[in-house]
Amino acid sequence: MSWSDIVLISHPRSTEHAMPFPRPHLESFENPLRVQLARRHLKECGLLKAVHEERSRLATIDDLRRVHSEYLIHMTRIMSELGSGEIGESAYASPVVYQAALLAAGGAIRAAEIVARGEARHSFALIRPPGHHASTSSAMGLCYFNNVAIAIRRLQKKHDIRKVSIIDFDDHFGNGTAEIFYADPEVQYISIHEYDYDNYGMGHYAETGAMKGVGTNTNIPLVDGASDSAYQKAIEKVIVPAVTSFGPEIIAVSAGFDAHYADPVGNMNVDSSTFWLLGERIRELSDKVDAKGSFWVLEGGYNPFMLGLSIEASLRGLAGEGMPDLTDQIPRETPAELENANDQVIEQVVKVMRPYWS
Ligand SMILES: [Zn+2]
Image (tube, rainbow, N blue to C red; front, side):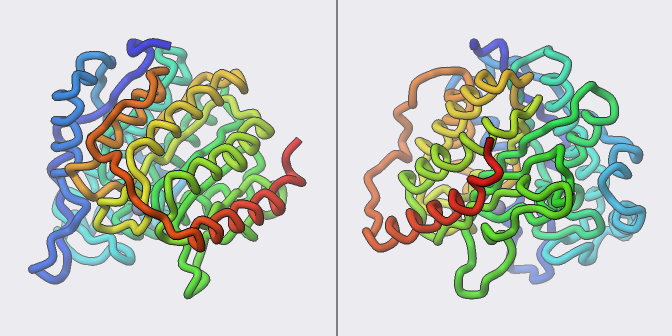
């Protein structure tokens, strides 16, 4: 592995869309600064020069139609023309939201196709708005179209690829992606996320898939405040065996960095060492299962000063470099009770999913 085997996809116009909150004093945290500062960091640490860079292109209507209902596509376009309004829960329109969402989906497609064609081993789409909360018919949680799902359906339609594993390490459960592939035996979805144990929401480990897709949905619902060590255990005990057993032809990564301890939205307690480990393990897994490689698509990550650092760590892991010594890696304490609670969650996930692992 070398840096020339990694492609970074972005586009200058990914900064045009800004999601207005209905209350004027509240600026949205999903804002253009995220990709601007992340890119600046990657430039300053020398990674932009090391990787190969490509621009995203617009996704087509046919690309959207493989995943989304005519209603969602049409409504997003109309609301974009109107210039404001609520397309879905916490997913507001701006005058350029439709174009921005097409460009983000197009970035994911480009990342996927570059790896599928063997032009690079791994790719990273530095795009926004994110996608993993968008389901077949609903925009939700800052997401309009499901970028990763659109890219996967394109690979299945236009390239000789059937089996795909998705690793989603965003702080939140990717309900949209889970829904889209819930009964699909060819697409494995694995999500590690903060779970709301007070209200028992979506993303419990008992949700394992339906019909022919039973066993292809894996949820790792951690208790908030989860440490680097809890993530490490979840990676080694669940993600590695699940992907190894499934044997995908390509790995898709919903790369959300909002589990960072300094993130204003997520409530987890990890630093860039966990994001490095994910890069390292996903590179190893791609080799182990003889996949074409992995394509990463940006989801969350709302502290713009930590996003670049977090992405740098993942890319260094993907490139086969040792763990970098980054400024956010500071000692933080985790109460024993919390560590113990997350150990129990991971044990339960293994118990539920092991029967499906070969
Ligand atoms: Zn998130």
